[in-house]
Image (cartoon, rainbow, N blue to C red; front, side, top):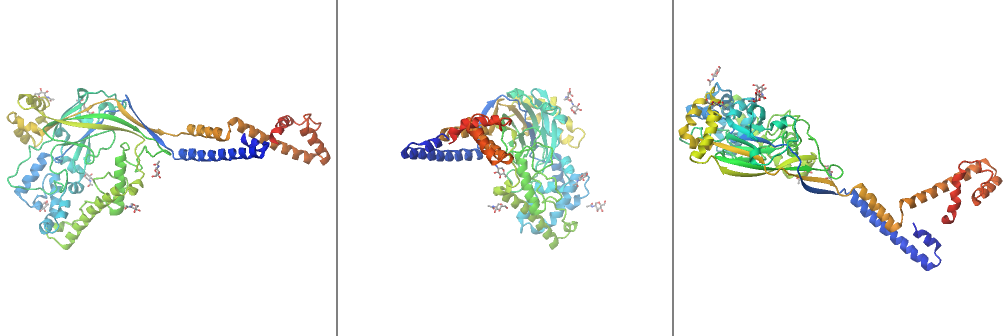
Length: 564
Ligand SMILES: *[C@@H]1O[C@H](CO)[C@@H](O)[C@H](O)[C@H]1NC(C)=O
Ligand SMILES: *[C@@H]1O[C@H](CO)[C@@H](O)[C@H](O)[C@H]1NC(C)=O
Ligand SMILES: *[C@@H]1O[C@H](CO)[C@@H](O)[C@H](O)[C@H]1NC(C)=O
Ligand SMILES: *[C@@H]1O[C@H](CO)[C@@H](O)[C@H](O)[C@H]1NC(C)=O
Ligand SMILES: *[C@@H]1O[C@H](CO)[C@@H](O)[C@H](O)[C@H]1NC(C)=O
Ligand SMILES: *[C@@H]1O[C@H](CO)[C@@H](O)[C@H](O)[C@H]1NC(C)=O
């Protein structure tokens, strides 16, 4: 800006060339730097700051699932029924609704199994699995036959206060573990979200649970009841409790996340809360609600991803996978549903029965293939727009075990607590289980029986929250100052200079307007006079004097030398 007059007014050619080069070089540098600045700004960089802050976050919810998903009494009954009569068709009129449904299901496949087990072992492994059974028996019937809250959770304390089991625990159904229970702190239920966290195991949550299978019959010979185990599964035939520690109000996925605690141990979970704040468009992507509508739980990235896979399963296989969360538009049956097998197949196997079995197996395989495909192809998942939540609380968990209860009379305290303070056996008093329980849990047998229990401690190991926050790294303030810096450094333009230029242009515009105006109103002769008087002398002419715009013309005369 200041260079141009130098070029124009240069005394010698050399100096004119010099100033021209300087002007061109500065202009080029300016363009280069500006493009760099703009490119940087429009790439929307973000920065991540990590700090440790004492923010109150809610005490986590704790979800517990018993790995032996059915009640010990149900399992013993099933076992005895098969010993008494190995044909499932003989038990179709049983008084227990679960046994009736179970036997009907086994009976449907029974004949097929006898005929084809050697030819298609993989099909029967898939069909006789826990998840197939849970998608074929009414959920409310399974829930009755599965592990019940009062018979699973012996006691529970939070910060020294006894829990109220009926109020503090919610039941949810999992296709593998069946009945699972979620503990939510009463302070969270009361709507008091900012629960202050107090550190230490004595302020935490502690519970004794019955997880072992000591009450189960042991058979003389090896027998495997169909449908109670997942074959080729990494989790089959284990005993203990599956623990998930998650934010209250969110959906837990025991099969995906969580920890196994064996019976006969005391497990301590030390938690460290973590707060993640993410930035949305245009710097990044985050969402506050699930793109798949429905559900009352808080948004989690994991549930969105699983729903996304479910969407593809439904689209490709025309059935849904029970191990994935349900979608709102679930008009299709579960992939493992076998209603289609007609009852005639119980008596004699036809080609039709086999075809239907194959169809069922194809559906299961289809769901598995789509799951694998979606897990491998990141484009498919990204098409669902599942983003991390904009604000999310997470818990880092460290887990350790101690043997529990101690041997000798030290361990008797635990036995006393379960059977004489909580009166655990009295919870079975009105059920047919009472005799089994009183015969098994005896004072004389206490060393063995206590090995079926486990204790869980969940406590805050560090109440300082690790806060990870994303924020724009290069904001618009920074952009303005960088543009200003570049303009000042290379071309010498500031807001004041720009205003001066604008003013000049305004004046020029006014001058031409006025000139035209006069042309229209006056004769060419008078116009010439007016121009001479108005512009080339500082004295106002008689024609322009009455014009209010006249004053504005004054600076024009002062500007003239600069312009020319
Ligand atoms: C079950 O009950 C129905 C009707 O009550 C009867 O017809 C059928 O034979 C019974 N089945 C068995 C296996 O007892
Ligand atoms: C399950 O059983 C309940 C009550 O027994 C019934 O209302 C419900 O419709 C059944 N669900 C299915 C899927 O059959
Ligand atoms: C437990 O909660 C239930 C339901 O909120 C309530 O009816 C019951 O009185 C409570 N029990 C105790 C011992 O506080
Ligand atoms: C946000 O998501 C959209 C759609 O998936 C994608 O096109 C875009 O690149 C993402 N933005 C960032 C900053 O990751
Ligand atoms: C992933 O899915 C997209 C969309 O269906 C498809 O175009 C692409 O070929 C797939 N990529 C791979 C590696 O399978
Ligand atoms: C357990 O039984 C004892 C003796 O019968 C009784 O004093 C105690 O109150 C009972 N405890 C509970 C929690 O019911």
